[in-house]
Amino acid sequence: MAISRSQKEAQVAALKEDFERSSMSVLTAYSGLSVAASQELRKQMKEQDGSFRVVKNAMLKRAVSESFKDLDISDLEGPVAVAFGYGDQVAPAKTLVDYAKKHGALEPIGAINAQGEMFDAEQVKQLAELPSREELTAQLVGTIAAPLSGFVRVLDGNIRGLVTALDGIAKAKEA
Image (cartoon, rainbow, N blue to C red; front, side, top):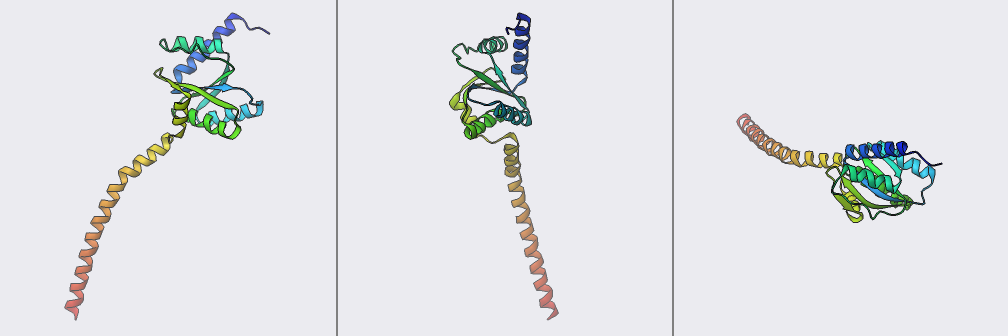
């Protein structure tokens, strides 16, 4: 059953809104994925504050051209799905690449960040290898805390040495 022009316009508007809201949108070749596997992937994306949608190429091209004036994805072919990440920029790439490793049905085509910069498939795979925002925050806190804890140990060592010296003097006076 064909959809009307107004339905198509509504779908393009929804896609455009998703592109404008997302911090990273990963395009992937969508084929060979069962309904159950697709639902599992949607669930994983939702847990990562994202979404996963299968879209028609014509609607995708129109939404991208309306959202990002300088971006050209006219060479896009075959069935395509888009993973939108609304929080962490690395999360959609990481989720898709990890899922593709387990199931082998998805292949990243590229990605578009919030500024309209296009990434190729290899860059998407490199993004997926980056640590998540939480991991980076933990590493930063650890890096900041390391010198402070070392400084505390140094001060503690000086105080411990002073107490040991005073204890030795006290024992010497008792004897």
